[in-house]
Image (tube, rainbow, N blue to C red; front, side, top):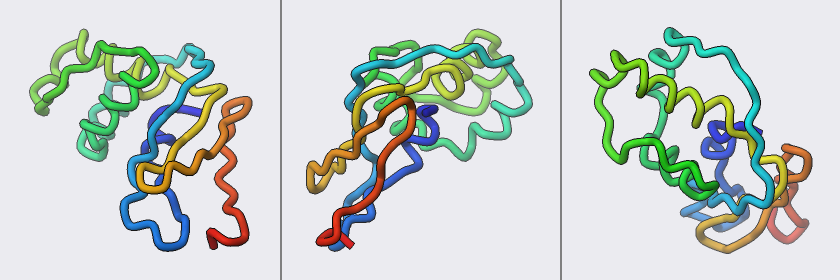
Length: 122
């Protein structure tokens, strides 16, 4: 599961008002080769919650993204490579996504999060 997907998810447990972003607890992260597409990265840049992406990548041990960004950084090949790696090449294979409000753990197995709610959470 790509980190982008993780951080777009939020907890839908009944009564939860602060379910985004889900925290990542990584047991196994893998890197998968993906061709770098600068145009794609530039189009996605404005859609990314940068603070959440940085927090997510740091939680799995990737510390190469800057805390602050601006669109002019998209002219840097080095920045694009780091952004590409964080966004498209790091995959959570095993671990959990954790609701920031309730602490509810959603397990991730073989890259697939189990977001099914218990009956009392619907």
